[in-house]
Amino acid sequence: AQTVTQSQPEMSVQEAETVTLSCTYDTSESDYYLFWYKQPPSRQMILVIRQEAYKQQNATENRFSVNFQKAAKSFSLKISDSQLGDAAMYFCAYRSGGAQKLVFGQGTRLTINP
Amino acid sequence: GAVVSQHPSWVICKSGTSVKIECRSLDFQATTMFWYRQFPKQSLMLMATSNEGSKATYEQGVEKDKFLINHASLTLSTLTVTSAHPEDSSFYICSANPSGKSETQYFGPGTRLLVL
Image (tube, rainbow over all chains, first blue to last red; front, side, top):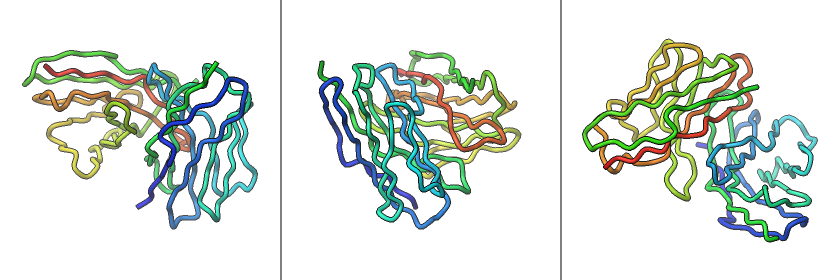
């Protein structure tokens, strides 16, 4: 079974600085998708970014980018120019290409210091 | 686009009663919806996959008679917690994949259940 590991329970960063959240996963499949979801205090899950495993280019969405290392099975999220509104729980998730359900990591709580 | 709603957002019930939670896809059709449970400061735990027009698929350890799921239309799935007990108190979240475009799941805002 696939597993997703987030080894940083908590992270903090100064406003306007850059922070990187780590995620590793374990799979024997070649076709899959990886996601980062944000869960602010409202608890609404919000998609931050998505990466298809077959794409070599790292996904980017404005201030958010990923470092996808397929051989190392690593999928880290970089947040540039951190803003107070970025404070949230961040979950890394895996989805097999042949299935629809998501496997989530344990989450990383990100604090932004003003 | 891709909005998922849940109702109610917050419910308190007495032990032994049943509670129904609705999950609706507002601007797309979803043949598959998912129900998660989240305990405080923990990750989401998948409970079951709701399939339109067929039986739900439950994850290991989830009692199907306890958590009844009905997916009667392409925009509505319901989760009924039967004979609720205090240990069922939790945050329940649903998600949905737009039919024919299953790469991304969109999540509802969640339902907080408190069983007294």
